[in-house]
Image 1 (cartoon, one colour):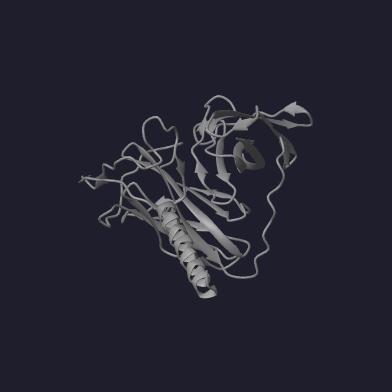
Image 2 (cartoon, one colour; image 1 turned 60 degrees about the horizontal axis):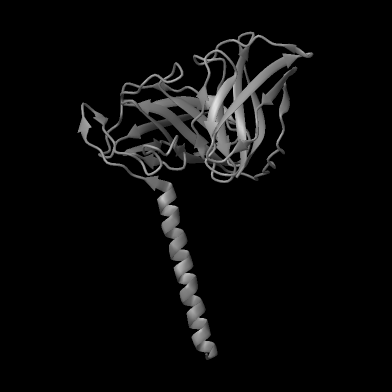
Length: 282
């Protein structure tokens, strides 16, 4: 084969690779569903990640899913300066969704975390008369932050996500190595669990001690604790089921890799956050 023919063939191959990557990216960013609208709410069809027999879906990969879209009023912020985070949930016709179910004692949960999983915040916004939501937020460092809107509407759970950019010099943190315990403000939080495997349900139990003695944990958001699990890389948001009587959760990890677990619990009227890295095996 002549050199010109070889170059032409190589260029054609690159075109196919980039075209395939672009197609795959579009499949990740948006997962539309079907809907019929009645009384301002949507009856959406099943997402590709949420059909009978497939278990809990992975959420938080897209700004739009099942006919609903997260619309952030702003996509930039200034480091270490208080700002108003305002957004709305729109249906496929562009109308603001106003009716939401109560989940974990709230109608809307907002999780903000930097792409390297630093700076975790769990916020509860206020809904305005026009149906939009707002909550003050301070992002201390530069970087790209993921904003998750976690809610239920019409009996269906949703987690939509968008990005918020804080300009400046970014100093990314390395993900800490997997560990079974971490110290949090004079307390030790220990994860008691068997090895987690992809595609199988895992029971994640936690204990809180101070000086080796158990600490009484108060109810928080209708249970003994709240747990968010994020996957390293794409920051997929896992749906975790809490136990109302103990610091115990059920989670199904969709694939092997590293996950960051953010456990929130209340002691003496104050909410604390413990962060643990969990490795999931094949």
